Image (cartoon, rainbow, N blue to C red; front, side):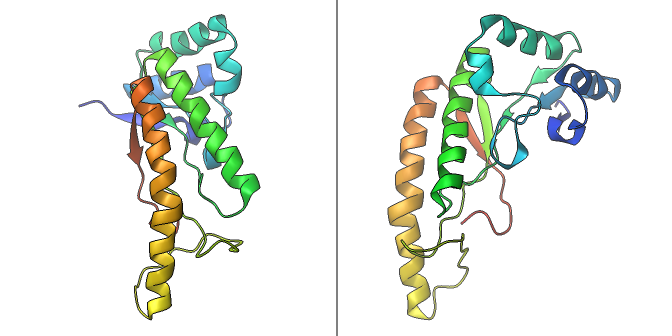
Length: 175
């Protein structure tokens, strides 16, 4: 077993210094944030993908500190009812999949996401009870029209890239 850390807790440090701090703490793995709510302070996939030398330096920072990049953290809500948020988080996730494939990382950690209760929703709505019946209708719509179609598409991309998803079960964000 290896103990690791989500690099976001070192948000005030550069990637190199975050890797050093993790190593100094005796950890053996690190999970850089690469989009969504955790941001891209240590890992911006779109920038790294453009530059093979940047990818090499990114990997070397972890390796020289004896760390494995255990996963990429892309905790977002790609099915958020506000298109500006869902589009940004979907792009982050798709780019993280591409980067993971290029650097040999096999897992992307994320939230499954939470849509609104219907087409006109403005905010995510996590319904926990199927009754009264209109709640059940909303849950059915969420799964059939948002959750399942989105993740089927992302799973296709991930399989092609040799990547799997790990989902953090976060209250209020996952169905």
